[in-house]
Amino acid sequence: PFVNPPLPYSYQALEPYIDEKTMELHHDKHLQTYVDNLNHILEPYPTLQGLSLEELLSCPLCLPSGLQIPIKNNAGGVYNHIFYFSNLTPAPNLPVPDALSDAITASFGSFDAMKDNLKKAALSVFGSGYVWLILDKNKTLALMVTANQDTPLSSGFCPVLNLDVWEHAYYLKHYNMRKNYIDDWFSVIDWNQVNQNYISCIKKIP
Ligand code: MN3
Image 1 (tube, protein in one colour):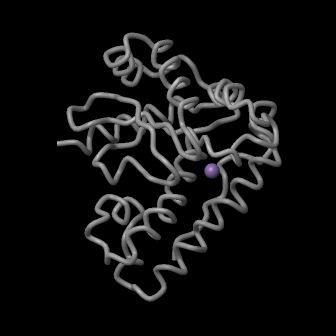
Image 2: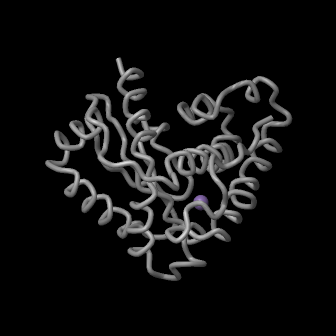
């Protein structure tokens, strides 16, 4: 069965940017529910239980038709949250490592331009969803918005960074001010990890 990995830092580690209660509920309740639901859905399908989250999400049409939406929602919920938590750190590390920094400059013109575009994209999400930095088939970085728990994996893109803009990710501290949450999130990004994600995406794309 799939498990909910512990956070790589304490619940209060991202204070004052992301509050302790939000982190606790987000990890122990929201993510845990997706893990439990996914395990329940896969119970009757031992062969699917052997697949990774990436495999479950990369080919929706390979799945039995009745499972396509439940797996998209719940394996997506597990994958998206583990990825989101793994790219945060209480000890932010700037500057951005060279490999990623060069790719950002090539795609967006500058780091600040990427940041502005990402913020605009995050503010544009209507309802619940995510903003992603992804690598496309030409090994170019781009931004992508997904609804609900959809992932870029199902469209063949490789995830480099994601921002959860569901209200549960920020409402206890930032209320309706998504903009403030986005700014605070930028203060706790683990750019070394994001650079690692970028490098592993480069290796995966033929
Ligand atoms: Mn969430």
